[in-house]
Length: 301
Image 1 (cartoon, one colour):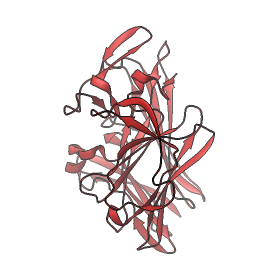
Image 2 (cartoon, rainbow, N blue to C red):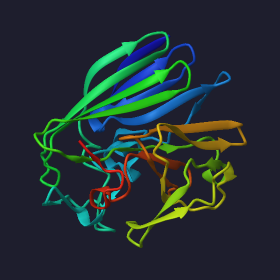
Image 3 (cartoon, one colour):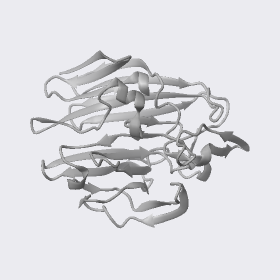
């Protein structure tokens, strides 16, 4: 029922997991941070492409909007790229010049190594590893990252991450993923439900002020319309699963984006609608924006 194949993708490789019975598949580019460039899932005999991913090798190199990027060792922004940990100060490279921030981590374009394939009646999966050896002085700590991508015979696509401290000291870490989802309709026509009680207030530079605002919209499925979102949310850190629901009433189609919550899991969420309004980013995060400074949700391994 399942098969795993490789094909050329410019100078890269595309690893495809396919369900030959349904035609469902996912596609991953391991040489570019394990970027997921396609998710096609089946509902009632019809397949839907639900990911706004990079379609060509040139698009992935340009990495506009960081589509499906792996956000590690920190998601979102670090103010001015500066932080302190255990009494020492660090400076990360500034890769968001407009805000003078470090953004979206250090491994989104790194080459992951395939270490395992698995196929059975219930799912097929591929496992990749990356050893970050502390090459950047702004984050001189050593970690091993294991990313596992699975296509399931039920319940769609699953993406899990394991981070191991390879250093001889405690280290700070945060993780996230930056996928953009779409259906066959403009974002304005979709409905959205957000699994959060609090919104993160930010200043003019998109850095948290420390204030939590109660969420008063999209607590139930609500038409997005002309709403503008580039907003962080806090999810209750209880063990379980939180689900963001995107609904296309024109096709009676739900895209449910779930994230595990609880200790050292994904208790934060960023939602962003780009100017094109062709898709919506649903970004699970283990920590707050600028967590290396405010320590909110920061994992210390």
